[in-house]
Length: 291
Image (cartoon, rainbow, N blue to C red; front, side, top):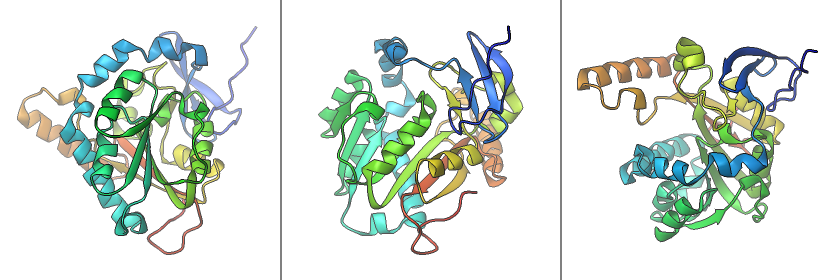
């Protein structure tokens, strides 16, 4: 008997087709929203098996845990906010919630600039590190935490949305937590980028059960609009660190970064960012249609 075809966890359409097998999972592509997803999904009781002390140790030893990485992430985000949502950065500071804050590097940068910055982190070990930096951290599964509705100006999720079993639930919660004029910033590997297009089943971000959902611009913008946001803007960017060649000779690293930069100019960069606006735009620089 043929197993029932799963519905897309991003758009709920019954138009998913299997693309390839990956271990015990099947990777599906949705013909409706053009996103991808791993099946079966991760059960809540399996969280502790995937995100354990070994996972925390790998993160702590990685580049993304470094102070300079957090500073560069802030600099990039600050430039984008000044372009797309200048109101958020031209005042005396607002209230930030960084979901998946890890060791709190990004939140610390906001604190240093007068923001009230908080984080959400699943792993207690990483949360304690962030707290040692002065960051208020809420520990647990983001979709199940009790947080004050309508109280945040900016919510950030850097390489987090792809981990959720039900990404729409996470987006709806963000919409509820943002106050008037609030902004959600999402960053995730680009399912429609040059890396995924060229490597297919060998794409480095196909790693279920950690990464469960795979987004291109259309899929991620569609997700936030279904989650209640008024508008969204998508762009692709070159990643801060290209892990595959991080230890390669300098000429190789420069060549690869040049290729990634060209892909970004063509709109097929390896990293996708979406800026989701809670409310209808009040000016040309404060919002825009999904693209």
